[in-house]
Image 1 (cartoon, rainbow, N blue to C red):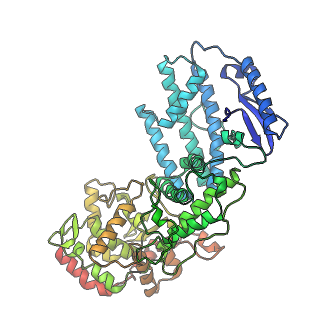
Image 2 (image 1 turned 90 degrees about the vertical axis):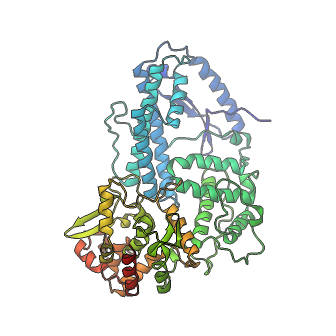
Image 3 (image 1 turned 180 degrees about the vertical axis):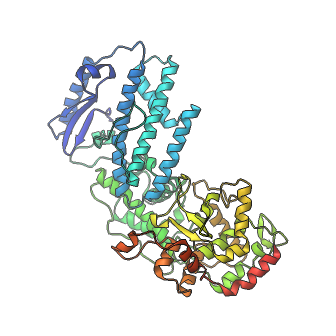
Length: 578
């Protein structure tokens, strides 16, 4: 028999507390926002009896009459209280982000910039965010039962939206290491700072459980609680990856299973499944087919997930289980010693082979460069030739060593000239849409003389004259928000169609090829790292943290040492074809 949830009953450690919000019209009179005190017991049943008695007395004492008219001062008061509460929640989120090894801080900063910008735009359109509108409606219902004052309701929505914008500004200041001092340009919220990490109300399932037993909680419900907490601070890609990994856990263990019943055998089965499923079958939208779960026959010749991807998904599952332990949903981490076993046949992206000389010769003598059937049939031989994004991106990767995402997200303003040296300026430059992998990825990469010889500067100038905002504007962003996803898939299909692809090479192989070419050109390691955006491998390398680094002229001299003499005839043929 289920019992009614008691939202005013809280537990801190082993002691139960009564905590209730004071109605707005009484707060000035009693000079308090809430009433909170210890129930002085560890016994859940006794705590519930005391809480029920106090809750009834509280409601009788503070019974409100409907307010005739809502004033702007009242809205400002409740908005400040709302903002204070949201800042306290944000403080908790910051702690979670810092402690979560799976979260890419730069990506989260990018996501916060973007969502804050969208909220700011709603202030000009009046079409407020769904979450802000929902929160404003809850506050309005508490203020008054009458809903006829449309102007004041709209003003409340607008004020709550401003509070959410400032909440994101606080999160950004914490994640970027800048100072948030509580002072804003909006007098409503001026001076408000986080005060504490909020208590969480007990769930109904916690109330059902005996104090000496773990609460009965379905795995699927625990996952929903986890995602509800984490989604506001995750970007789309992180959400998608976590949905896939947690979908695997529920597919293996069963969504109807209690989370407390997850054991070592379940985790071993998850590990075995990850190590043997084909790449591409793990989806966020639906359960994994039973035939892939802990397969007995793992000798198939299909392409499996890379070790890096296996380890990423497995770590996400372990992070979820660690959260469950921290939240006291389960007593211990099941299968804490279970790990993904690294297979020498499994290549991660970082372990991709460089392209071989025969592969490079085939790539740059393929229809993409000598003439294809049409823009949609690039792998077929024909008379169509064009210096567009598909043409340039592989060549830029070969002569710059830049990551695919860095190349595709280049804006027109990222092509710059300094001391007679053309270069790619890889930075965020106040562009919220860009994703920079690490702080060391921010750099200047001189444009190789072969790229200039092939006409890249002319291509840039044409796009600038056409008022394009991105250099490779033809490549659209994917549904997950990334620039590289669509081109990466296209490149894989193209390499398969032209029969050039091998299991251990991918577009990232251009980067490995470039690094090998730097070594062949006797470019020292420090310059190589500056060009490729790699941080120093040496722990405590203080020299890498001081100074501005090599000059653009020095970098230009060094990058021009990258040479692929076996491709000279191909470049001549490509220029003739154009």
